Length: 297
Ligand code: ADP
Image (cartoon, rainbow, N blue to C red; front, side, top):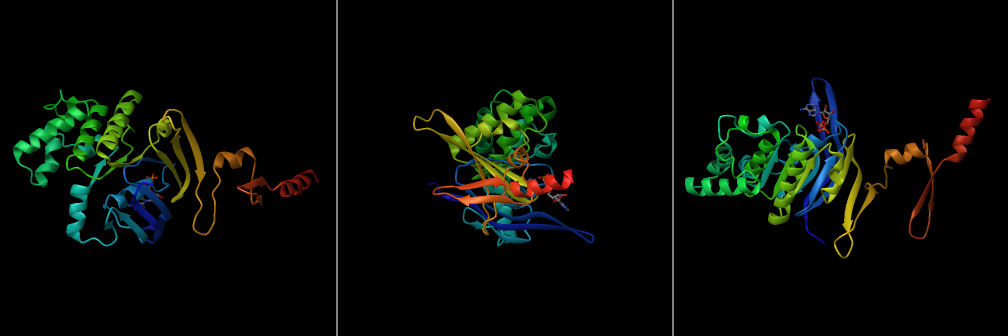
């Protein structure tokens, strides 16, 4: 079993806006293994960005615990926070303009975080060139962002994010504004860094094909994790099966996938029965009969 790299326990985030409280995270429990590449999916407003910002040290939770590596993100000094953001975590945002400085070339953009980290000019130039080659842009070193396509800009952004060898890469909708071919290149580049350097990756995406590109998909709904899809390979490493999981919280509550509930027209309660090695769940037919009688009366 791989070691746990990220551990969120009962993570709560409440935003206060004037007199209103918005509960963005309602008690997230989530473990992520070192070297995992995971996707976070879910409707807009479900708390994905809030979770990413907390994991990136850009925001602090209201309650709960969150650990990344040896760091307790709720108990960091200002100085630790700066070190964490500069060296231990890399970001890629959806808006290319947020990732790159427009008046710097691709190479200068990649060198910038290294300059902040104190590398010599020669080391910076060599590493920036190497990173840009790794993202397939070895021929575009001197191009400014406006001379690169959206997909190319995002690959430069990945090189920038990887500049200081972070152990965690957070990508918030990195493929949101590019075509499907560019999206595939972006995923391939992230997968290569994950495989070759063991960087743990969390990517927020609306991309429906994502399940086949990552190790695990975690679905979020209303500030909680809802479903998980895990990919498994058979012993030969070839065939892939995808298993879908519902999340069981600490008090034993289980959220069934919405399509299942709709398919069986389930509501209010479910009939359950313990079997030897599983639990059977049925719609509450008795309730349906009553309802049906009421309607026909
Ligand atoms: P997602 O990334 O899944 O779209 P977010 O994490 O952005 O979801 O938002 C979760 C909830 O928190 C939403 O209801 C959103 O309106 C609210 N929210 C997010 N950021 C802030 C903020 N800075 N101030 C107030 N409310 C916020």
